[in-house]
Each structure stands twice: as structure tokens, then as C-alpha cells.
Image 1: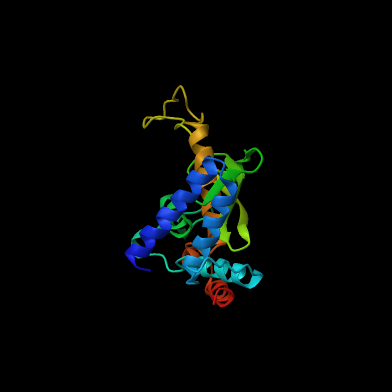
Image 2: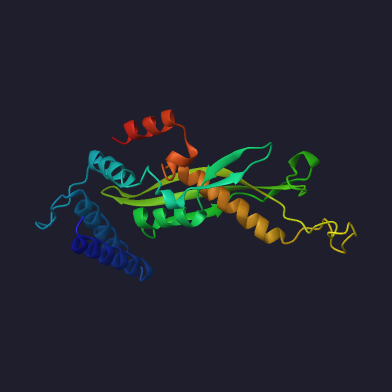
Length: 223
């Protein structure tokens, strides 16, 4: 896609949002359909807007194929995991960048229900007992010739509760020893983990979180 086309599409998306904010529903819907066909390469200069289910699904497939399945090396990281060993991962910032690049402003992520807490000692690593579990819902909104279509993926994320050290270097107990540092930050970390896992269902960072067989199945579905 040329830069001129990208600028045109961005201008049309801004116009759609402006119309929706002003309550111009019919005009916004027409612009959505025109934008959909523009991206598909279907000419609408004659004023004719074909409305078929086949083209709607074609557009969905075209959009999802823009998701990169190969993560640039600089974004791949490793971390220690419970039970020993390491695991590959990407920062949530990379995931948000891909979502913004692929879907523009037409995505959102929300928590589902309240966080849950596992406080058993079996969930401790480096002396930090406790785990926070958050379920999140990633929704992608895609304009198609049949109107807005939504793709919804839910996933569970987790994060360990960060705690103050119990003793100083000399073994002397500390006043806040063992207490959580900031539960809010831990919840955000679990939420970020849920977003990354949900986004992986769309193929984002697939080479980091999935096995080779799963990546092949994803590519075959989107081919």
C-alpha cells in the first residue's frame, strides 16, 4: 500500500469517527463501506456499493493477513519461569503497536470480572508468595460491506505479587517485610499478560507463544 493510500484511508477513518460523534449514522456507515471497498481494491467511483457476504468475509481475511507472524528479533525477550528454566515473551508495548498498526483505533481491551488471588506458597518465586489472575477480552472492530464486524478473543493473564524483602542483608527483619509493594501495579501486569495472550490468538507474536504446528495451521487458515 502506498503512502498516499494510507493517508487517504487514515483521513476516511477520522471522518468516520467525526461523523459518529456528530450522530451522522447513515453518512458514517456509507464511509465505512467505501473504506472497506477501497482497501479491497473495489472501485466505488460510480457510486455503486455492492453488498455481499462473500466480500465481507474477504475483507476480514485481508485484514487478518496483515498481522505479522514473525516477530522482529529486538522485541523477543526471555524470562525465568516457575519451576526453573526460561520462556520467550514480548513486551505489551509491541503487542499494542501491532494492534494499532493493523487495526488503527478500532480495537479495545477490557477486564472480564474481578481479579482473583492465589496466595498458596506453591505460587512463590524468589520469595514472593501469591499470584494475581485477570481475565481480559480483546475486541477487534472491522468495517466491512455488511457493517461493523467484531472479532473477540478472551484470555487469562497472571502476575506474581511483588513484595518487600523480609530481611536486610544482615538478617534483620524489615518493617514492611513481606508486604505487597503495589497491588495495583501487579494487577496491571496481569492485565498486560492477558492482552498478550489474547492477541496471540490473532497471530500476534505467534512465533514466540505458539509451536511450529500451530503457526502452520494459522497460516493455512489465513491463506
